[in-house]
Amino acid sequence: MDIVVIGGGAAGMAAASKAKRVNRDANVTVIESGSFVSYAECGIPYFLQGIVKSPNDLLHYPPEEFTQKRGIKVITGRVVTKIDTASLSVLLDNGTAVKFDRLIIATGARPRIPQGIATGVLGIRSLESAIRLKEIIDRSKTITIIGAGVLGVELASTLTEAGKKVKIISKYDRVMPQLDPDIGKILNDYFASRVSVEFSSSPVEIRQDEDQYAIKTTVDDHRSDLVIAAVGIVPNSNIAQDAGIKTDPRGAIITDEHMETSTPGIYAAGDVATVKNIITGEEEMMPLAQIANKAGRVAGSNAAGSEMNFPGAVGSTLVKVFDMEVGFTGLNERRATASGIEFGKTLIKAKSRANYYPGKEDIYVKILYRNSDKRIIGGQVLGKDGAAWRLNTLATAIFAGFTVEDLFYDDLGYTPPFGPVWDPLIIAGSVSMRE
Image 1 (cartoon, rainbow, N blue to C red):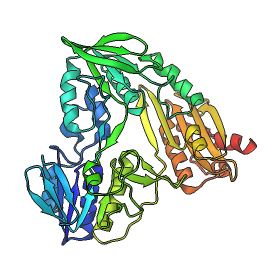
Image 2: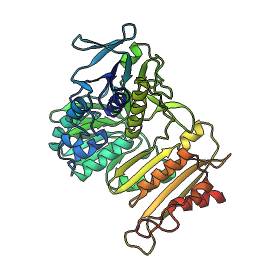
Image 3: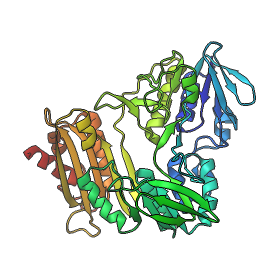
Image 4: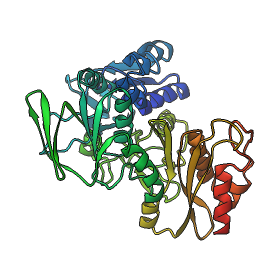
């Protein structure tokens, strides 16, 4: 059996490795357009900041791990230009055709760059782009970031800590609009006291002017040494669409629980593909590392002949903003309303540790729950001391179908250095039970 994987990122290498483990006799080939495979894309902001010293430090495994130890053929620096479903082959940019019995598309996504108004604006999505951008960042003093979502806020935080003067342009009235307005305002006030933010603004024109960029927005004009776009991503699904494989309105390849596409024998995983939202049941993009790795493994297993199902996800997202831990999982108010769900909500503030133990900080926890059965459908956290693991507990609760009462009775571990006896999560469950 010949299994071809297009893309050497998290999903692609997870798929290839699982396929080879399932079927040792299979010929597994990975085709990657860049120079690197199996690297930590989530670590790129910290490489740009300078905490991670070398791009090689972001490599999960050297290529030899796959080629020599796992028996996977890895082709780098080659672009797949066509998927031929009739001849069961892919065509490379050098004219070579590679045959397959099963195909896995893990081509990821590319940064969305404002079109028609921007010259020289850079985006980040690959390790190669990060290496090029790092050289420019090192010689820049002022940096403008377009977009105030997770990546924009994370970059603004890390680059400010690296000593750069950063300005961020947000088309919304706050940063990280994935958070609901109530808890989002707390983050917004904290963030805006550290980074210059131009709210309710969009770029009108960005042009290179000598050694800087002249930036005109709907609010103001300013100059900057570097402009970075962080306004979302576009799935790299063109070759799939050209082959007649079905995609959603955003261009993501639609998959089933086996990560199989509309074309039998062709699978997709990672940022280019959809997964099921276990709360709404809808197929959607969730471009997150853990989902990509797991979906890739499922795709690889099924491609190699061993059935494996992907149950869905809740989109758990964590980001470090200066010394603040911020996260969200499941649905926010806007998404719950759009899905026609009648819900209740609770936002509480509590301490991260026992009141008498040194180092305690405020932690904010918000939960959304369905009115009909009190099942938790969303969670958001904000704090400086252990907020992240509280989000992970909420994600587990949503995945397991917890009600607010279940959250209250959940037998969390307790000791004063790690949390109060009435943990913020337990308080959130208790308050929700009374409402």
